[in-house]
Amino acid sequence: KQEVTQIPAALSVPEGENLVLNCSFTDSAIYNLQWFRQDPGKGLTSLLLIQSSQREQTSGRLNASLDKSSGRSTLYIAASQPGDSATYLCAVRPLPGTGANNLFFGTGTRLTVIP
Amino acid sequence: GAGVSQSPRYKVAKRGQDVALRCDPISGHVSLFWYQQALGQGPEFLTYFQNEAQLDKSGLPSDRFFAERPEGSVSTLKIQRTQQEDSAVYLCASSLTRLGARSPLHFGNGTRLTVT
Image: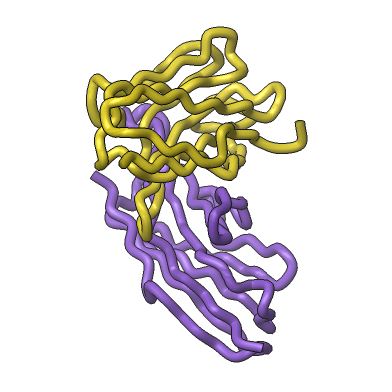
């Protein structure tokens, strides 16, 4: 079964810092990887989706990279702001036909950006 | 609507009661998923629909859990004879295309179920 791990579990940084969140997965046979943001009491908001053939995706101050062979992804947040405070989750989708019809999620990194 | 809508937002049930949780996906979305999220954990898959067909229910924890999507749009997750371990946030997500295609999941805000 696919296992997804996110390190660190929690992170506090001062406003303006650049930061990196890490995600690792045990089975490299993935279709894509998606990063989500979750605010307290809310659902998940999709941030970036990387197909298995891609190396990275960028959206504004966010950049996600994927190294499928080593089972790793990183989410880079530039010039962090207090509004970035949330829990960040990564999720991998298995290849079609593997029998798994779902995303496998990590437990998330809780980010606090201190003004 | 603009996003995935779930109701109710909060539900308190006494142990042994039955509950029904509703999900309105984004209009036209083919795929619909239910996830269970315990406190401090990532979401865990429960079940998957492609239109009205329930193609995967391998994540449902027991036969007390039942989901349906009879017309391929609104879905209901029903939990019979609730137990305390059923307390969690239940998230619904939808996707424009069928599973495996290149479309992200869009999540609702969830229903927080507390069983007392």
